[in-house]
Length: 258
Ligand SMILES: [Zn+2]
Image (tube, rainbow, N blue to C red; front, side, top):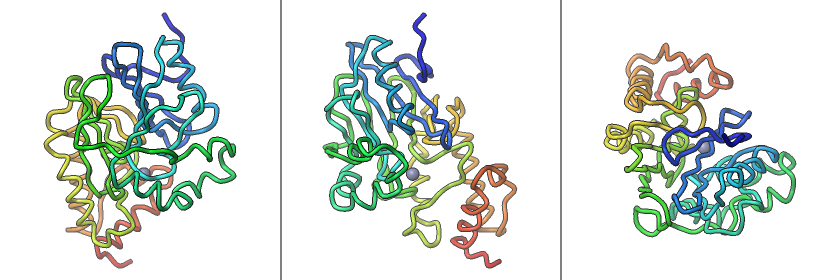
């Protein structure tokens, strides 16, 4: 039995590490031939270093990376993961190219300089909807709900959906800044309904891995409907760390005045 520092197997060939910060998840997909795709490696220096160490313990090495979206905690990297293709949606790559300073600003002084220097660096756009790599099929589902050009990754052979910052059990729906009335968020959420319906395992960007993706979607739909129609919600996530502020912002977007 291999002792791993962080990775936990959640489906055959699919492993997840959960950070001490905001339960941020990193997902590893093995290609069955000694290679690994590393999605959203995060977050602290020791946690980032533990991912390639765990891969080595599994007898594999990173052959590709992927960032689900442009936020600072999803564009991290570690030198030991190597100089491999780091994929993202075209919109995320564009943001990393043209607006990198703003993307990595929250990391300055928080992570060692050499890790800040690697964040949001040398990213490549995925052509089409399927990732060109050595492992199982990875299908991108791009929408603008949480961030512009945010990509959820579906692994159809495994029934896994790596949702990025959507469908969390601990985080309320968190719309992009440029979504004054939640319409963009609702459109993005609904664009995922079909893939959620066929997924068996859900990996949110923050929170716990779940085996009822449909319930996560239902909870987000209910929350949004409640605040839009009644101006209030008893969603238990509201009481979670840091969620009161987000809830207040969502109420403003829903047109509720305090
Ligand atoms: Zn995010």
